[in-house]
Length: 392
Image (tube, rainbow, N blue to C red):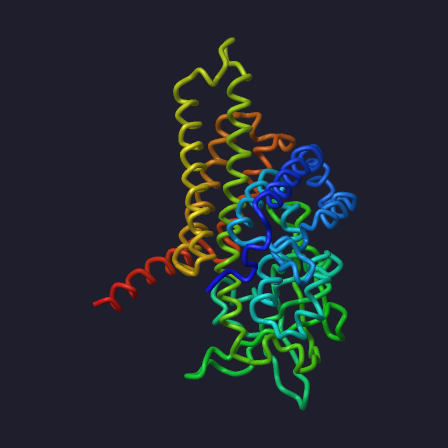
């Protein structure tokens, strides 16, 4: 099974996209990282430029107005986006990732025609409404309910920590239509417009890091939607859609982690080469060099793992173990690299206007969303044992 965005972008065209993104990140966004953090918002001019560049739809197929990047190309782009504040990528991440890919992979032709062009252009912000109190990394614990009422569905429940909810136009909403049984988990996915009666958006969450990347609660109070909003036109598509979208997203998050780790490493090396202790550059000290060596090793290993996992996803060789392996290693790796980068900076690394301080806080979330590290370990370990048992 090939990736939904099968190679539509040629090598030279993709290199042009990559070069333009790298230039944009380093010359436009990086100089304004403090502004974004202090204001807790990405400026409108930066948002408008990302729309013009096609970044709101880079992973949406070209037939729907996107750039049509495959996951192999996606991870290269993600490593560039990870080099600056993660709020930039978060702004259009759900359109390309866990929300948009549900529509791309599981929507009906009519649903794709209704929404995908707007998602690709950035005129529509799609949000992935899965997480709720008591149901985070494991969707099986879902409590939001959808009850059939004639030709409609009525949705009631509360979602939590929903990325881009304050600016969303569309919620890809997961709800239980019946208790899990032998026919399936009883979880369906609905396309719920943000302006539908009964949709209530909570206040923006105050988070440890990732200022400018907005999340909030979303309440569904008897929200009535038509049967044509049911993704794929079938109730039991929901759970599979969630698992597939999350697995693909895990490789993307792993790549993002590599990009951020590279930035932390570069900041640490630059500081070690110029900052002095007793008149000697601290980079001359062997213990500082040892920290830098560990950082470099982690970054290189993560980059190779991400590229391999993306290749196996696109080929269909492995869409379960490899994504979890990449996310587990890379998100844990970037946490260690960020910690070492602060250590290399010493007291300066604890100051709010120094990039590694922001990075240290920002990357902590990467080990939590789209499946915690603990969930990834269960998927990897359980999957390998089950495969061995089947082979006996």
